Length: 134
Image (tube, rainbow, N blue to C red; front, side, top):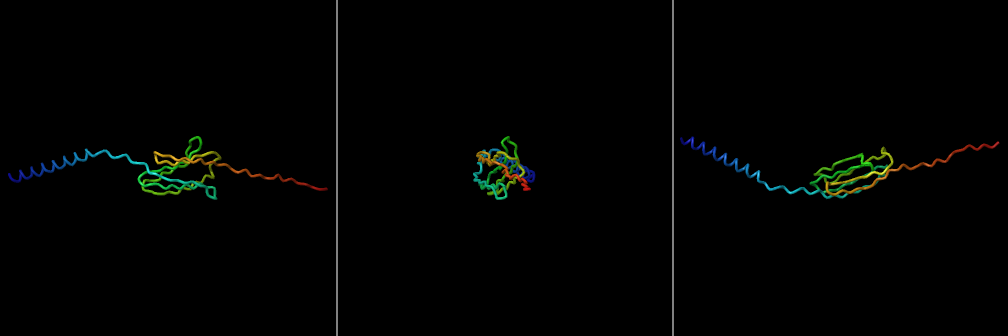
């Protein structure tokens, strides 16, 4: 009889503990919305004709780097992860046609946009002519 009462007491105690723990988890306060990571960026061209983009940001949020043309077609996209603090991206734009492009860097809330113009320099070739004296 004593073992039956002890077994029921242990079972009741475990049930009560499990129910109270499950109730405690379901009444958690709502989490605060995550803030976007603040970032700084710079962009310049190299002597080889490539575009270098440097991004420095806070940890805890993602930052996206995108290269699009004026029609909205995307040529490059890279996500900088939550745990990264800095990223360097080098874009080879030598295969892209001439035109105006946009480099957009965004954290989901704030977006910085830089215009990128690609133009092929025209080579001036002097016409060669043959001059003969008789």
